[in-house]
Length: 306
Length: 183
Image 1 (cartoon, chains in turn purple, red):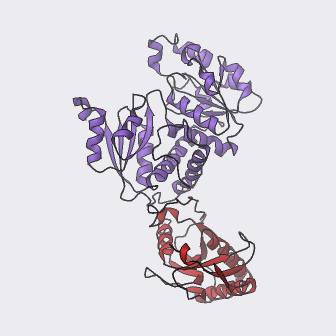
Image 2 (image 1 turned 120 degrees about the vertical axis):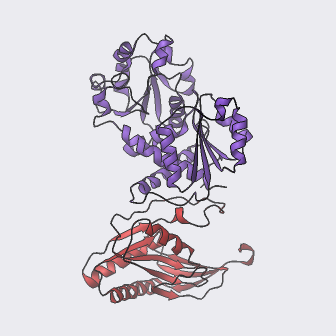
Image 3 (image 1 turned 90 degrees about the vertical axis):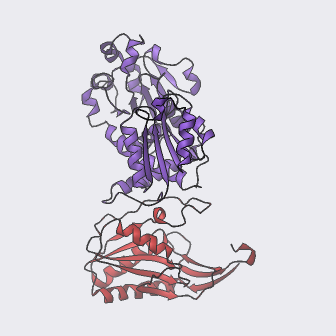
């Protein structure tokens, strides 16, 4: 059992067997997280650098905890206050860090394709922790783990991603991953925030939440970036909330309960109402726990394969 | 490939019975005893012993399962990555007499991994080792407390334990690999 690639750059083109292997392995790591001593030794002696060129709290902490729980040595790098602010290029930064004998690199970058570029200049295993509006594979894996845990399988499951699809790496990775696993994926949002030709990825497009809720098992609600409003893609947060905010009132139109997911951080009562976020069908905190298990699985599978 | 039977179904059953009695004798009962089987044959063995212990002492003994994949010392050198499974030890091992159970006792490396894994779960009062077959060739200073059967082997041979939980029959075989198949 071994992953096909020695990097995790995205879920596009990743085989079903590989996704299944990661999810199965993550289930085993979840058991480790329940133990009094949440640390196991498989990455002992490996050094991992977390290269975060974009601010992040939960993903960075989640990766760091996952790395430490696998007994790896961890170095954190944030763009602010580093050589990058002195004008160093990504290539030079990466090469310098590699010269310090690093085994794995976890990278988040505002530019799509930055992790792919890294694989060409360093020998370490590269894990994409979010690149521009391209992909965020570990987020999609943890979403799939959470859904699989709840429903037992992903095949045939109906999932709708709600919000700003155009600028969302979470949406893209989820679409690729869920489609590979045989789920039915749809997207819902204002026409200005849905990319043209997205149907080509095999997803259905909705522009009214009311039409979606009767058709799905789960809603993955994306964070609405407040700066998008300034660029005129939607008129106001209040209007966004009225049409695309996921609320109890809208969700109650469905005949059975809908599972609510959110990658965080939540704008409460903008894209998702507080009562749903804290309600019985919300799996948002479960997603966070599973995120750690999934990241442990990815680090373990890549870090012990060569 | 040559296959010699070392134990048949009756032999295996009697061995499990004897091991269970020895365990009771040594621990003067099963009061603080818990069993932990190493995946996968060790798990089956642990359940069989637990059943026998209940017959002898009229007391249920807890059984856990240990997956030692994460603790292996050959994790990185292997071509084939082993599939990681969960450990299922749903009780506290602190202060208990943990009887670690495996089917074949060989280099001792599996047991070393298991000891480390167990220690990460808590501090047992004592750990004892029970194995169905001891085939020798230890590479670490580890010794079993209860041995079902000593089977002298050469390194190239293989000992295969079959149990009806996963296989067609209950038996132990000594397998002589062909010269060219040896690694």
